[in-house]
Image 1 (spheres, rainbow, N blue to C red):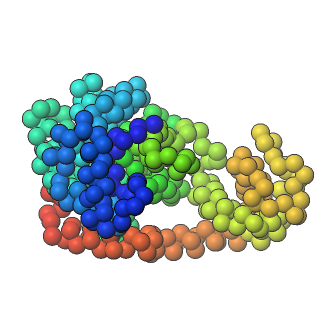
Image 2: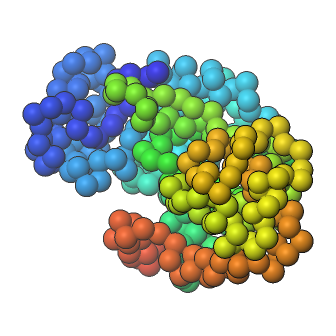
Length: 359
């Protein structure tokens, strides 16, 4: 746990309003409470010292040198020479500095804030030839993927340029460290794997994410190492079907399994009740009344394997449903909450030279 080490703009104390003035008071209180960080405040852009609640969760920055050292110590053992090492939401560049000083040969920095980038450009003098600076947030790849489908600019490819292409069973091709205000990036990576596009083309991506403790009552942040398994539960040509199966599965948790899979893949119900394959874990006495919510993840996977084992699976209504959903996803990629931000990103890109914006 890394308490009080993230410069996080959100309502942590009761009694503060969600206005800019309320957040400004909260931030002042934070620095008053931690005088050891007072010398850091002058390096933080003024616009972030009075930020509103609408954009608070998009801007999380590490400001504690001690915590940066701890994080770097956790990252170093997992870094390989043939990987791209990157930090997103770099801010003051504390983690990048520690990684470079601890022997990482080259670090790629992704930072959207122009004020922070002014100072980050000086890293090239301190560490000649060992840093790259990109002016976008790597954790927004999902949004850029959506925009790429609208105008064909290939922002995702630009942000991932130079990342080696590896087999899925090889070591990760990229290690990314950074503060993650939400889990949207992880959802995008899972979808990328299912569609076999974007980052998944380069192999596995290893993430050291500084995230909120959603499952706990305190206000701490935690460092979590996330990596896809080398061995996938099904063959690559079935990953897309598994992805949509799980989406439907969890979306219909109160529905009964047998009637649902019979609708998706006719004649699969008998296989689910009397499994033909060997499984490490299978739901005991599954029947027509068993509901999706009754199963554990390994049991869900076992049901999926029984369903796709039906000879008629490839021509089933389920595969047709997947194809229809795929077509929809080409036109509706993001939630309504992202629309305004995407319009802003599009506008910014239109005003700037593409090479300057992404390099």
